[in-house]
Length: 203
Image (cartoon, rainbow, N blue to C red; front, side, top):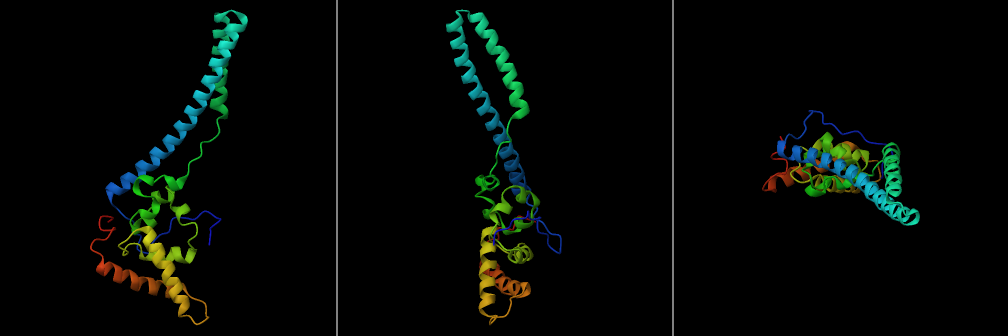
């Protein structure tokens, strides 16, 4: 189910968060670079577009008035006014958060523990989890430290566990505790056979 209201970063009862300095640094650097690129792209587009218009105008004025000095003066005045207007009225550049961590494979490719890492929630995690229910997210947060796979792996496992719980509920409502129980069993088995946990360096 899609979420309309902004979600807060989920927290664990033990307060744990991943603490891999290399990956944490890459996430923060990706965020910084994404916002800088977006700002630069918007500014340069406006700059080059305005430059082309002013160049054409200058050529027309020079040819029409037969006075290159006057044409240059008009272009300079218009350029100054245009830059001031653009600076005051430039539209906010649009950034697609889900693309911020493309260099790392996207937010779903992060180790499962990064489900509770605040910076990841500024880098596309809410968008990636848009169709994950609140109950599924709560269960995933409880299991993210132990789960050896990625955020995407964990979310799929919890969704599967929830479906499995419904199959054994015989028509009655399924509780979060039941979903957690099924998901915890699967996580423990996965962790047992996984050669290396993606959370191994996450603290």
